[in-house]
Length: 191
Image 1 (cartoon, rainbow, N blue to C red):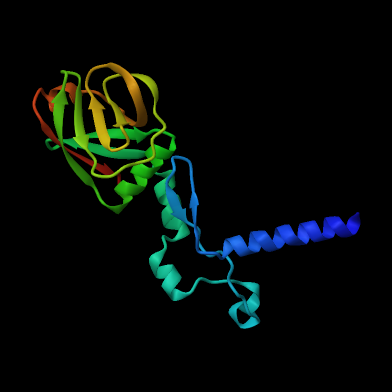
Image 2: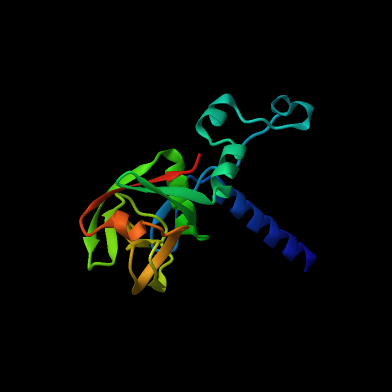
């Protein structure tokens, strides 16, 4: 019995290790394919002086430093500029808002947003973000993701299925800044 269990565990370990370095793709929720990265790396004693493991210079140039990544993740406020008037906003706590935060860490995003139904402005983001839509009754100042690739900002209220990205902190002058026409809106991380 012990011998059979030993062979079973050895086989499972071999299967797991071979899957780590296969370079194949794997299916994730939603049917998309993601590459399986080779996570097995040969390590020699020369590569680990003083029991430490430093990334190669090529790795450190292409990856975000842990401190920079932590700053992005911890950033809770961002600015929304509407026709030159700046409003402070706070990020929601969900994967869509985290992806939006990382997108803004690269650079500010300016969208031409058109009026819809007299209570919201809608603008195409030009890329998709993770959506976890839920039935929501929005209020003035809400910033949401619609259909995964459109940003909607509210100066009125609506009930629909959205992913919350953030909310304007102080609505003083918000509705007046948005007006009734199309507007240019810039989203940026706070300095």
